[in-house]
Every structure is written in C-alpha cells, then in structure tokens.
Length: 231
Image (cartoon, helix red, strand yellow):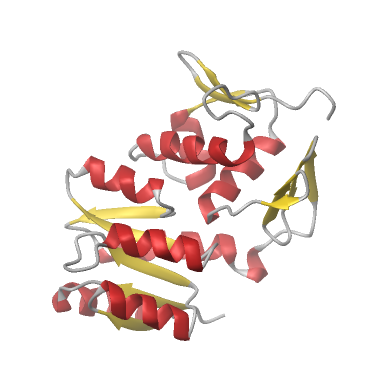
C-alpha cells in the first residue's frame, strides 16, 4: 500500500530531503511551508500521516497539531523538534503527536519512525478483530477504536497502542524503559514520552486522573494496569 504523507516545514532544504527519503521508501509526499497551508491540505485530502516541524513561523506547529487532533482525530503526527528542547517535545506529545525526531536528524531515522507509525495503522498490519474488555472499557484491536461506558475515546495512535498493551498485560508492573521498548519499539529514547502518554491516557480512561484506579503508578518501578473489580 502506498501511503500519503504531508510534510510541513518552512525550510525548503529540510522539506526536500525528507520528501526524497520518504518517496524512496514508497510514500507519496505533499509539502506545506506553513501551518495554514497544512491545515487546508489536510482538510482537502486527509493524508495517512503528517510530519510536522514545531518551529514554524506564523501559526505554530503546536497549534497546528492541536487543531489536527481536534478536527482530524486519529491522524498520526510525527513531529520535528530542535535538539535539546525537551519542553517542546513534551508539549508536542501533550497535544497529540505520536512520535518525534530531533533536529539535526538522520533522514533514515525519520523514515523508520514514519514507517513504524504507519505500520501500526495500516489495515494489512492490523490483527484479526478482537475485543479487549475491562469493565466498561472496551478496545477493538481490529478497528483500533476504544469506548468507555459506550462513549468513543479519541485516542492517538500511540495512546491506543499503550492501552492495548496494558489491557493484554493486566496487573503487571512495567518500567518506563520497558514500555518504551514494548510499545514504541525503542531500546533508547526519552522516557518522558511514556510519562506524557500515560498522563494523556489517564485523562481519557480515569474518572479522576489525579487519583487513577486503572493505570496506577508503581513507585520506584513505573506503571501497572489494574483491572476493574467487576471485570
């Protein structure tokens, strides 16, 4: 399957390098040099994934990502951030980005990250339909959708991956490093990525995210998914 990727960056040199590498990997690529153009392009023809530079002039990459998650729920976003700007990475993940690559970056690494996210959302890569249940929380691994008390949950790609993994391994504690490897496929990386996604997932599945009863913290270890008592 040929995937369509929108690359949003106001540096034409970066855009051209990313385009060439993604096209060599079999993707169809569109380019946008600013946030408003990117939003219009997505509204006209939704891509399979967006590569988004957070350091855009005008409408910021953070605001673009926020609007994409609001208007195009489930659209995967891989963001480009400046080296060392951890606050930007965390904020990008907070507003719904699925992955990130820091500048200066290896185009090959970006291609691999894009491929990893696309593989998780591609129909051919999805497992046979199966429902994972925990009380009033249901995840459909075939359709990659989730519901809580009958209401759809607007999960990003990585949020769904994290929820599915935890539902498949209830009552077991995992460190952030283990979750980074098991869910993201990274043996090395910024573990704050896990922290941010846990926090976002809690906001969607917990009655009180500040006092979680499902996705609980195991002090000194990491996190554990605690099944509902009536599951």
